[in-house]
Image (cartoon, rainbow, N blue to C red):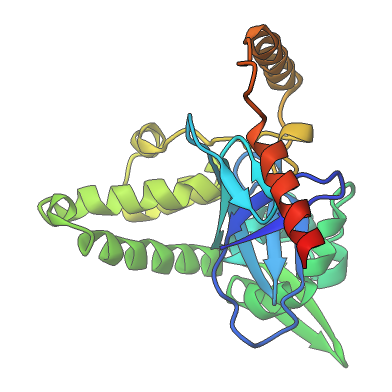
Length: 283
């Protein structure tokens, strides 16, 4: 577990996998499109590993971080995500497919150029390593050209589903007691949180003889992380959501101003900072 400080001075807790001694351990926050919703979402990219960020916050609690108090008690957890999921919609658009035409072969730096999302450029080497599993690749001299292959994508997705199904069976008796089709359906539902219905989720369901509507009913709603000043790492939200958050924040501030502090009470953050300064002067 570690914490980091924003330029504005706000500190946040981030729990992330240990990257070990390899690489330079310099992380980048990349604004990419969510593979299913298309909403701009922040990911952590460190040592060629793409990490998905999850935001957790309890109703009551705070973090003591050095001489700083994170008052709302929120924290981020990052978990690895296969970059193919994030790149799949970009490569689908990038092949410029028309009708039954399989599309065009293009260089990878052209495919991942997404206007308004320069973060994809950081994924160049990751794309070169991972995308051949779902693409046809042609080499002309020292240059490589990529084109998404539907059959390879389906094979790759099936491997992901079957591997996840085996993992679910090991989680407990609830999954072990289910019939095989039910567990397979659960696995597709989880994978489906990162796939567009058209064409990939529908193609996968047809291949596995599962009902697409049932899969979508099982899938939990996608939680969009807060954005703006409330959450520097969060995804972008709709204007209605931002307005609702501002009203809630304003209401909380008004209520806080009405609370009468006891005569001898002090702000715990101020006390902590003062104690730290006194300790520094005494050394």
